[in-house]
Amino acid sequence: MTVTRICSALLLAIILVLSVVAPAAAQKNRNAAVRIVMCEWVPYTTATLPDSGALAEIAKIALQLQGLEAQFTIVPWARAVSMMQQGETDALLPVYMSGNNLKRYHLSESVLDVDSVFMRLKEVEIPYTTPQNLQGWRIGTVQHTSYKKNLADLGIFLVEEVPHEIQNYRKLVAGRIDMMLDTRETLERMLDSLPAEERHEVVFMDPPLHTKSLHMAFAPTSRGRQLRNIFNEGMNAVRSKGVYDAVLDKHDVVRSTGTAVRQLD
Picture 1 (tube, rainbow, N blue to C red):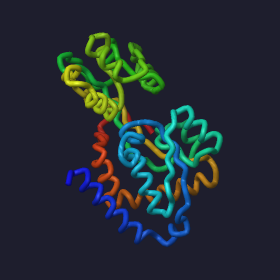
Picture 2 (spheres, rainbow, N blue to C red; picture 1 turned 30 degrees about the vertical axis):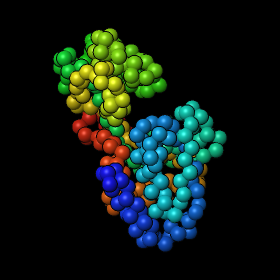
Picture 3 (tube, rainbow, N blue to C red; picture 1 turned 180 degrees about the horizontal axis):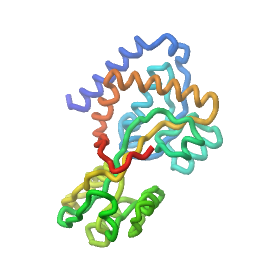
């Protein structure tokens, strides 16, 4: 039996035990469904991995412990936001903590902290202890992220955006940019997907630029607030029983180092 199968079997056993001893208050929710819309974001939420990804599996278990059934739908990001606006779904997983998201949703407690890091070729030495060290260096980021604005706020303006991180990697190898910025998880998954002939030695530059928390967003209604509170209770149980760490290990999810330049809330 492989390590993954052993881990899955242990998780199932834990879930069954916890379901038996679930609070009586959760029993009244039995068989109620929570509609959750997600986007493709490996390894967090995806149609390509078992259990729909790490955060989907954690959310499913947390709700199950509260007597609720998670029903997942995966769509593009714009469609997911529209579904929330139109009341076609109960929740969106995951979203970053931000002032805008706090205004338009009921946000759960953090489901994961994510580090954003700079990555350079090992052969290219770049002195770095603070973001200000990077003024004058060319940085590649991905479109539809907040990185370009974050860097501009720090006085860093040599930033080039592309549609996908693989394009930044190829620009990095070709010497057209000096480093790239993305979540460490995204960068590691991208590197793992490369054929051997395209792999070059790289360095993740410490400390991370920032750490941001991911959350489940619930509709801005009284039902949404109630579901958010129920979900938070389920998450507390998932964490306290060790299921949270077991699921992240199962999906090989990178943890935050907790040493970022800035903690973004």
